Image 1 (cartoon, rainbow, N blue to C red):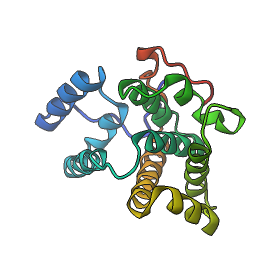
Image 2: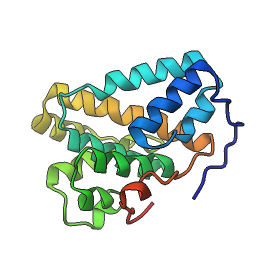
Image 3: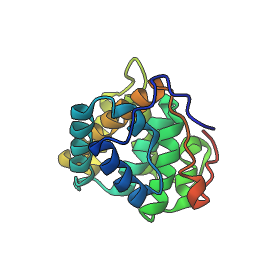
Length: 188
């Protein structure tokens, strides 16, 4: 599947474009499609990338739980680009790949713990419109994760909602990141 850019691709020959391209190729092996759209607005691109770098450093919540939540959110919204990149990052970060592949079908899978299931249910509930989060969900996760981890998890799911909705609105779809590490998703 390839992206159908709804906004014409930006020229990556600018100073920021060249720097971003070089970094992306070193880090991910390719330039993410969203860069071709975001670079139409350099200040916004720099702001978002700075924000993403800071968010990536947060550590109050277990990184595996955060990955499952992000992927469940992307699957709920239907962002194939985010799922594709999520599989690639799961591979890169050393997560259990067989488990990561099952996030979109987690309800039918037996590989997840009760906590992981509750985190993915929470991510789905946050990613629906209207919001389907219940007091019981929050109370249960708060008791098991604590305040800082729950706040971090909640904000990360909100960030993934922003990413997934923006990428989907811009016409971006699976770019083949998961293919580069032979991690084929079970479902989109």
